[in-house]
Image 1 (tube, rainbow, N blue to C red):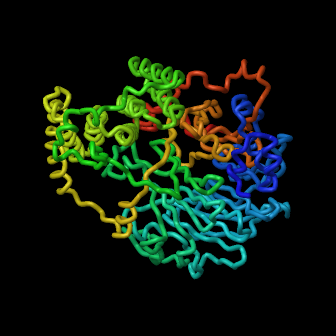
Image 2 (tube, rainbow, N blue to C red; image 1 turned 90 degrees about the vertical axis):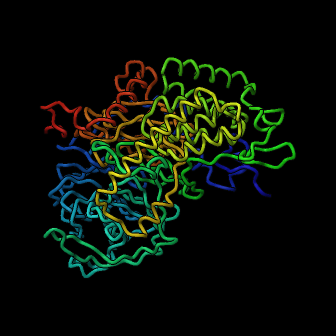
Image 3 (cartoon, rainbow, N blue to C red; image 1 turned 90 degrees about the horizontal axis):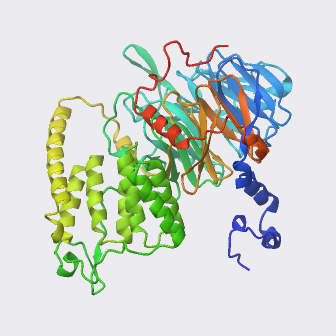
Length: 637
């Protein structure tokens, strides 16, 4: 008999017991309880693990969750018992630079550890030997090693990503002498990018280990199929009398790599001096269907890797007519133009009381310029309305987004306008707001086309003051763009390879985004799933870590976890427990606590709106302006 519902979605205990033959009931219960609201709402600081004498740059849980590894600027890797709050082992590594990554090699009984650091080296240690000497060493990278990654299905391989633009593959079954005779280069971004690329982060899909994602010092997240890539050797050539490593181009143009990028950035040609974006962290969802990226000087983005979507700027729906056919409005059909019986807006739909209340609260917040609360209320109303006849909710949210005007807000408003028009093709305000948003986004030609189409479809609005003003603004912006285009032709631009241009032109857009934190001061800031796909967690430059509800993108809670910056937030693989670290020398553990303790909590941030607004101000300024002249970026020992 075919099951009607996925086992993990069942909530009735009797049904779960009946269906236990279809899956692991213990696994389902454990994951559901892991982030049950009663637990997540009562999270508070459990303890601090002290021992490091430098910034703690990376954390890693063992496979069974019984050991927590931490690595620091002090060149030490420490292993902790998170339940007894005791240090199990203190490993002094031979590194001569800050350690940025530590990984347990899978299926090795938590005995093998790999490290990567700012000295361009990677080491592998066998901690079961109680010996600090590495059993493997690699010095092939020419710049800082920022991240290591392993595959849950392979106990012999690990990969290193470095700022020389390369991803190297390390096989413990093979001898390695760092003499550049081994074919160990999996990816080399320099083969297709002229400016010096830096790989900042790397991730392997847990259910499809052939799928590898990397983030670099640009706006793109790249996902590769390792099965289509042949390993190559490192070669060297000179640039400005400096030796630069290079390898053969081993990436096929078609079928091997897919690029992901927020749609509003894919059309941009440059950024201001304080807004150089880089992907600081990337991870796959536990079920392997989603990709989560933390984009520096921007927000956190979630991509659907199985059902990708292209960026959308202008895609007006055709208007249905009385005979059941459709028209694009160019013919000026009379019934359409006059908004007759078959062409009325559907914005007067009566919502259920709970949806109507959220809509009114959103409108009230919008009038008070409380844009974050307005957007959250409209979002909750949309979720409750379940997408039925709620074009007005999408348009109201678009209005709030345009007025708030954080990074990517205008593009998010464009997407909402398209959704509103898909629900109601006769929605005149949605046409107008889309044209205005396109202009604000810098898509002037699309804005003009949209406005012209509005007038063709609804001629009675041709003399509307708002329409006339928008037309005037478009003409002014067209002239400004003409001047800027003339200036650009006088500048010499470096040209990337044709393959790189092709991949970027086909970059997929995001599904969801999570806003509120600030990521400008460090390039190792993480973002992770908490409780499979129930919550998203990430650190921030304000010394806090954020928890978002995955379903609606709303901030669930904020916790103060560092005096300066939180870089690492690592959820325990099985229980409701979080480990955080950053500039402070301590590792902090967070878990559900007695509700009575929460009343006196000094860690949970009460003023979410103020914290979020301050972070957005930080992101649009020099990231180091907020440091006092006598304040060190890393805390003194």
